[in-house]
Each structure stands twice: as C-alpha cells, then as structure tokens.
Length: 206
Image (cartoon, rainbow, N blue to C red; front, top):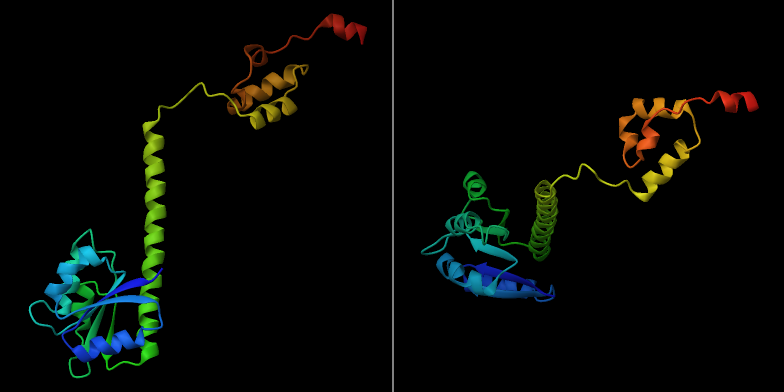
C-alpha cells in the first residue's frame, strides 16, 4: 500500500522535483501552494507525512506545523520543514512547533528519500508503542473494575502442586507447613487445615 505525502510549497519547481524523486518510491503525492490549502485538505487526503516550506504566503511552514501538532486529530502526522539555502532554518522555532526534521533545498534525491523514510519509521514505532501502552492501561483499568474474588479456586496446576507437597495421608508436619505458608491453604478442604492426631493404636501395630 502506497504512502500518502502532502507537499506544501509555493514553488512549482520544488513540487515537480519532489514528484520526480519519489516517482519510484510508491508514494501518492498531493501538492498545494501554501499552508492554508494544506490544512484544508489534510482531513480528506489523510497524509502519512507532510513536507512544508518555511516561507509560504498566508500560512508558512512553522505555522502549519504548529497547527498540526496542536490538533489531537492530526498531531501524529510527521512534518518535515523545507528551507532554502538563503533562508536559514530557525532550529529553536522548529523545535517549539515540534517539527520532526528539516531539509535544505536544493537537496539530493537520496537525502530526501532517507529523511522521509527515517521519519516515517520513527513515527510508526512511536505509534506502535503508544498503542501497546494504551492496551496495557486499558487492561489495568479493566482489572480494577472487576470485583476481587477472595474465594477463588486454585488452578489445576496449583492443585497438582499442593497434592504433591501435601498428600492426604501425611501427619502433623503437613499442618505445621500450612500454618507457616498461608498462601498454600487456598482450595484445601477444612480437614487439611487441622492437625492430625497421632494414633497410639497405629504406633503399637507398627
């Protein structure tokens, strides 16, 4: 399945260059001329990544990135800022608006492809981690909602272990161990919790 890339740049030349570079990279590309148009098409185009020039009319790349990152419905979309050789990037501002990366025009084909792939990989890993964390939190909430069952039945494995440690014909030592390890009492019949009296008759016969 092809990735969707939204390019916001008022330079027709850059639009053509990006389309040419990514022609063999399985990307569906939509180009717009400014940040305002980009915001208008995000909900319908649903891009996987956005390239935004920092110098555009109406809404520039910084403003576009800031708007995207502040919107919970869009803030997971990675944004790479494009800057010209004579338009130095404001790295502090780029950090404030939470841009994922930036690239200086003119750029090499492999440089652009590498930057895009790297940002997409980081984004997918972060999203997977967030999904897993959310699942763990949901499970924890669900467990809290369930009423605790103090009279829970021991599992088959636990029963087997208890029977191996405390066979029913054992004597007084078994009762002492049960007192010493209360957690082992779960699921045992009441008679197992009482000490067995030593039978003088049995001792005499032995």
